[in-house]
Image 1 (cartoon, rainbow, N blue to C red):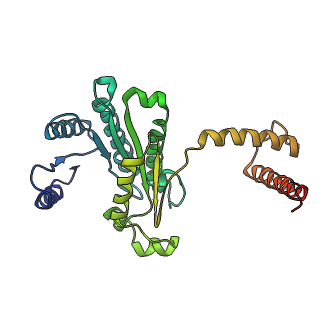
Image 2: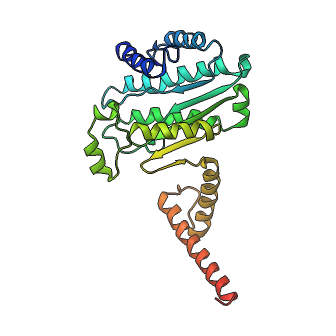
Image 3: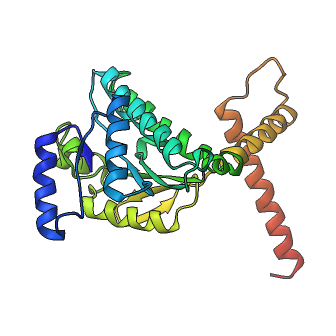
Length: 272
């Protein structure tokens, strides 16, 4: 374990050692914003394990409504320091044996709205960065460089100190009409992700369900290019004009109508 809060870290270590025994767990002081701290705690972990680190949970995050620079330094820079060090230390290109890295994202890795200010939205910027890094590893060409299986876990609001210091569980549940997750639910999903996750997968954890968020961006690009060209032909939109969201909705309605007519014709043809 590694954290900037040395006092809390030592208390937690004592609790876990009481439960699991000494020699089963160790703690290192880490400010994720400092590259030298990363190097030190990683070396400490290698000494503890007596060899290469095989699995790494890249998890650090804060939210702040105005101090966007601190959010960026911890959530994005700190995450990248840890990730690049993991590739360097575990990666096969440097003589390592590969490994596993789970990076903590958020529903904000997919949804950029819901913030009250531009400064607050930097939290989502940092979580989109998690998605960008994890998704890049779905490329076999990139994954084969280091053979570090990189996956992401993206929970809904969780009943943790991060959430409680910025809002209340009651406000979240009344606003979104959905209960807040308990840490144990994220832990259970984490275990499944470790076993089942493939490079580039991002596991979404919601109340009552977990699912891999589809990595369909490339397919969607092709679909929207085709839809934009069809829109110009069908609606007579000139090449000087930009295709809008409303134009995509119109072509979607037309497509659904044509599919309905085709389905109706097929049913009539077979006598139903």
